[in-house]
Length: 256
Image (cartoon, one colour):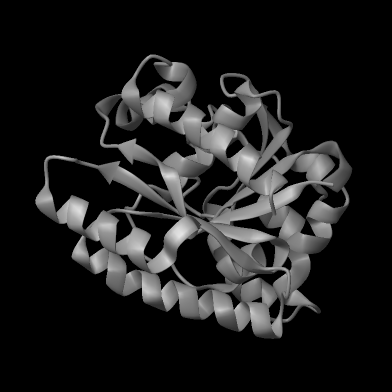
């Protein structure tokens, strides 16, 4: 049975997609069977995994509306060695179309159940907003991975996200919990980064992952080549950090 995790943060530009794609590739290198679900209409995770979103015949949009199943819509990321349920701009229309559907918050959960046995991990890259798409991700998941930068505004957004997760847990998905907070784009030379990092450890304790992802230009360059940073430049500090994070994730779920 797959462990299903959302990579979520209501704040944009915090490295959600970079984390989802590189964690998927890092887990694949550890011989884990991984499905990456792109729930963002921008389709950045799809492109970052080396799949052309303009050429898709079916995507997560059709899956959510019941027009296709995951077996028919998924693609394989050759560079990352994991499967992808891709997305494109069509997904933006799903919000409106799903309003009329039965059980609309759990469409993704029901679709994943059909392929559950084929994977060890399912990672869901959520859009940077609390929308029907994000809600589908949270209802399908066992836990949430929260990537965040160590800066003041990130702390403000974090409290909103934690409250959202609590509400979803209470009303829609009692399995849902915060798996951990991942510090990303970390610059140890900045005093503020170190202060916020220390605050996170003090307040959230062992919910903060030990792995820290540094600010790294190679991770930023990789998507333009249609590759995860982990395979684009395996020797880079960013790639090494995500491989270490994959190992920490495997270890953490064994203790859940």
